[in-house]
Length: 465
Ligand code: 4AD
Ligand code: MG
Image 1 (tube, helix red, strand yellow):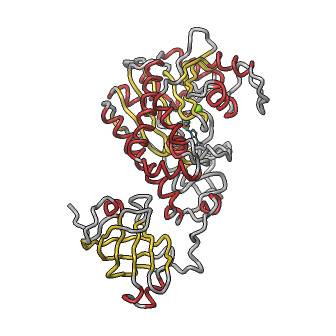
Image 2 (cartoon, helix red, strand yellow):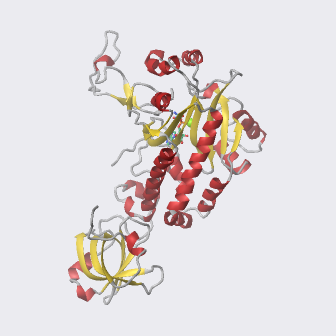
Image 3 (cartoon, protein in one colour):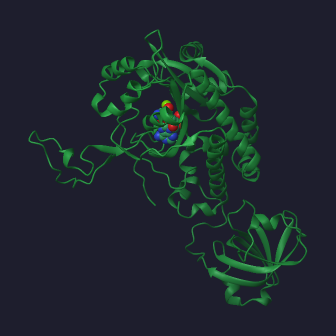
């Protein structure tokens, strides 16, 4: 047990004020007052609320008082008393103030006025000190914890899949290469190709786009596993919903078929949203008030209602019949764009939707092939304001069918020998999905841009910090 000499703001705000001596440490959000009294709003990140400190300037040096400005870090010791002013239950009457670090008001970029999200992205090293990012980061933590709790409570094992791999799990070729070669002068084969047999891993490697393939190996031994780690995509899409580095949660389950997979996906996201409602009430109230008045209502709606389930084919029919003007036209066989997904969820059904049985041409090689020879047992979960939040499938566990698809799609079969071994030795029906962690955080916080729900976003042309 660690016995600290200070108490967190969260705990102080819940204490009964009896003029007891307390110590708090944190950063100044604002200071106001006059020469007779100073009111300092102090925040330590434990909770969205500040604690008010009342200081009599006569008790402290002029120099110290001058240095108490927005952003400065202080220790305050004093007595906890009932607050007469409205807005907070308690306040601290300061007896001692120690200045840990000043923040020059001429150069500290976070002043009282509201800042644009774009400006805050440029100072991502300081933005956790704003109300908005404090709240985002607390919710992010709570959601990560809830992910582990859900799976642990349901008998799933956390499997650590590699970040560096030799394969392209999604077959989309959107990979960041990993090499120790001198890029100016890599070794070459007699044919003039780059000779990766001389590279660090004696092969071409990349940052993983998904832990799924290794996850499947785990499921074929442990039954039910999940991964939760960073994934990387070198797709040049500058949208409010894409990152080049994002976190993905990927459960993989032996003996699950597509229906079980849908049941798990629905139960899992509902659990996460409910966990946020139950455990992040203060932060959600802040988002609801500042950014999105319908947020809490929308979250409750998702928890309380069944998701719509339908086939891709039926969805395309709805989209083609609608009077909507599309930027990208729809017809059977085309990939659905965000505008189509959001139309189904926000206008047509007004509920989350799970689409299944997509054309095999637009999906990855590993999906279970239906009898019709045209569709595969893929599933996407579509959410209001987000579009696709989950992508998954029942897996093709029949060796011949899988090999045939790999050949059709021109995927280098020899690199996947280990993956195919699961189908050679004790193959079994299985299924899984991937939940984009940042898309979940977007949904739960109501924030509008994925760059604002991860501490240090990685996007095309941006890897500062
Ligand atoms: O649909 P995706 O590409 O599916 C897979 O990677 C499968 N291997 C998952 C599986 O079955 N185990 O990605 C899954 C989810 C998407 O639904 C989306 O929420 C998120 O990952 N995602 C991204 N999030 C942020 N930025 C990006 N560039 C993303 N690409 C996918
Ligand atoms: Mg997808």
